[in-house]
Length: 324
Length: 254
Image (cartoon, rainbow over all chains, first blue to last red):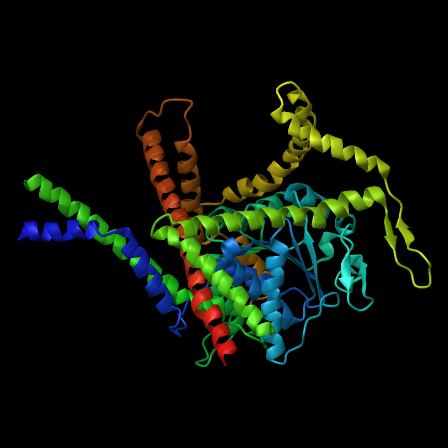
């Protein structure tokens, strides 16, 4: 009997790994269609990021350093879109630029187009390029460009010409209503770095001693090395990976310390319960974060099961060999 | 072709590329190779064009040659900015870097590399301290509670500014405990990297072992975050096929 059991576990270990891939693809695909809102407690770093961002005056321009491409779309696209929805709902003007990859401006443009399209369909205020936002493009050499940004943003970015649909000409971005009051990087209300690489390190090294509020949305791979920046108050908050996306969407939906239907807040900030941040008033709140969260749970469950089965199999096969 | 049909075509190419790349999970196929090469070619070509259009033209070529603008009523374009001809010397300096491939003239490549290293090294003095200084200070945390009024930090709700300042000035037992774990972890992890002398005695070997265990816990957490990131990429690809592409297909088919 014990030999049969041992054989069973050994056979399980010998299953072709391609079956595991197939099971993973099928289960995660199926889980995309589960309309479940998984209740969560947002991470402290996500709450800090959201609170800091919510406290930026709406007349302040926000700088968005978008250093991601389609290779990390699974995490960064959700972060980027949530950030766009947040800023548009609050009527912030914003600038998108990139120090990370030449492909990033086009990827950002595509993601932004999706959000603009959904706002147009919902009959919400349509953000216009030049008047409400700018995409100033790619700058190579993140180290040198960040120093230049810190020294003099007008000189650093004045080489770029942006098309103004009003005058049908290429003009300096600083002639746009978005940047006309920005003379130093510290005149911006917030700098959000959405990244899949070490550009957050570069920014912390060169900008974190400024009064400018610095926040970060990064992938799960980059996350662990960024957490010490939050602990040391070099960034105001961090949204990490898919959990970070869902955290952000969750706070957009339910606010912070904002009483829910039962009078209890869905997101509690115990340190200061007087601080109440209302849910986002318009547009979509739940999107990729909510859709991708159930499949992530399914995938992680499958992984844990595979690890357990693999280890039992290994132990059983060793026991079988010893008994022989 | 209507915009919806164009979007469907775009999504369909994306789906084909996804299937092509994921075919590696079955085995290395010609489809995978083809898709991989298309990706690499597109990325390289796009990057070269983007580098010229977004960077070299704006920051080097236009500055060197000056810029002209159309002006209403003028017969010809008018000068907007004069060119700085000295910028032309940047090109040969940059090209010197390619002499790294020549044995005879390899020394020339050291000139631009030396300049880059000089700029980089100069920045590092400031950069190192800005990055690590606050983290070093942040690691020096009080481990002795200054009040025993209550175990956890009280909520600041309904407090006056003076009361909030008093709360912030105190170290509550829960904070002290948390700080102790943090400081112990930092010291134990650092002690693992003392290779200059032999670890002797129960205290030092104990700290060393604890450091190794805590590092393993840290690596485990990092690995977990990495796995989550990889799954997110796979889930996004499935969403692209089953939600984005299928929705667009439905729109086109009416």
